Length: 177
Image (cartoon, rainbow, N blue to C red; front, side, top):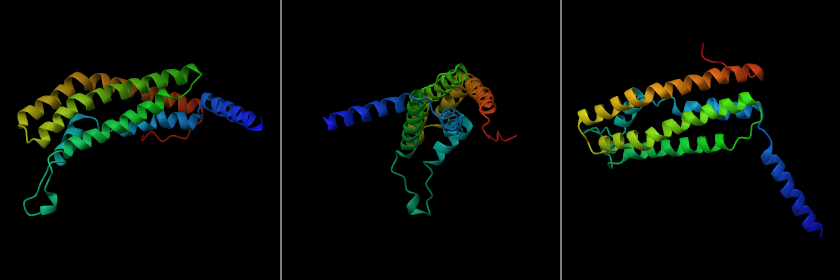
């Protein structure tokens, strides 16, 4: 009987702990600061980074590539973004400000995740397969034209809401100004 009561007590404790809202610091870290995970998202930065994954030097045998380095890099980025998105979705929030910020952060991570899974994965395959510069440039231009405007808008929304949230909760945040 004592064991049964202990199990019930522990289950209830875990349930109530899981249902609690996170501290403002924890919440802010997951929904705003984690956007740093995709700070290199823009085609001119991330495209160059993926291209660098495939560079070999004739005089350096250790630089010899297997042929899937750029694809692995995108795969790792996808896993990181999926984990951040999962963590954000699991946050329990009760006030309207936090809900709006959480929704915008989810929207941001979902948008970039889609591009990583589609366009950047295709770009990485071209890099690894030594595809033509024209094909690669076309993919980067597609991201710049079709995805960057809406992603930048959501990024701005996250930071605007994040600044208000930080101020409301007296969080000491340096916005790089």
